[in-house]
Image 1 (cartoon, helix red, strand yellow):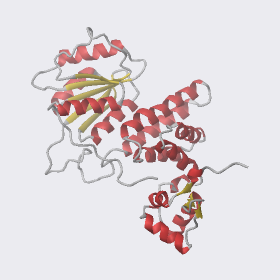
Image 2 (spheres, one colour):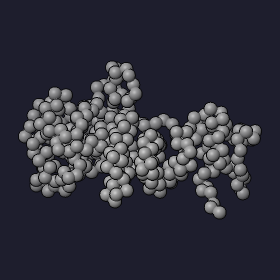
Image 3 (cartoon, rainbow, N blue to C red):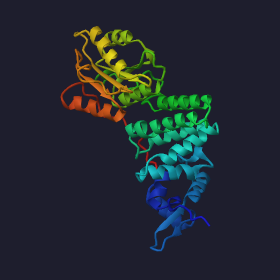
Image 4 (cartoon, one colour):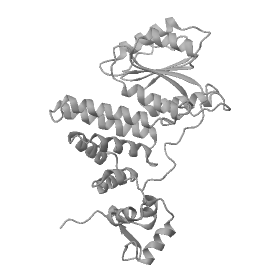
Length: 332
């Protein structure tokens, strides 16, 4: 007989987090007998996850697990492993399973809830879970276990989730995604896009998301953007930051060329910092010098980009507001 995973039996605190109530409320429900709880040898209450979910449905209490029925336990265990520092492997496996089954809505919800989990910083979600998932999608396609259409489906789902994670994406009052109101100081402006010849948008979309959650107003130019357009639009919008994403097969020569061309098009009266990220290779410092830019940075992850921006802020350069939290609620 298989021993049930102990993580499927919740303490009153964990149950309270799931049900979005105070632990004393859960204890009161248990004491009245309306919510079943077992007792450990030490006298501590343990509430089966399925019992907590039945109680929530009966009482009309929504939980983040509701959309995953009948997979609630799988999602709970996968997120529990993340909380415990065990990594994202179980989450990736679940995501791949739903992708192969054509369950795109479940896949989208899983990505969305993972990004909103308080134990998962945005940069960790992007650099570890999302990149890990997409890397495994590519590996499964190479092995013939996924079709081209399924790989495209994964990319489309990720794009939709990245859009929904933008701060203020669902507002219809015309305010900017950076959250700036008419009485607030104007946010710093950035341009983001993928280099010409690069049709992959996910890296640039991730950068846009990071910048917007750090208070920037972002002009997103999309994939396959000519370098001359970056220069022209930077001047037109007075952007203080230009971020260019590069995906394989882009490599070191493309990085060097981008810096050279943009350096030639640079106008001192419209200063900006330049950040290139993704498949940036290892350019020789002799070939890649700062040039006329306020700053030049090669980022291999969104976490590196954030550290660079924070370093610039501490040095008295363009200082963005603090990050916007993805969610104020707690997910057990």
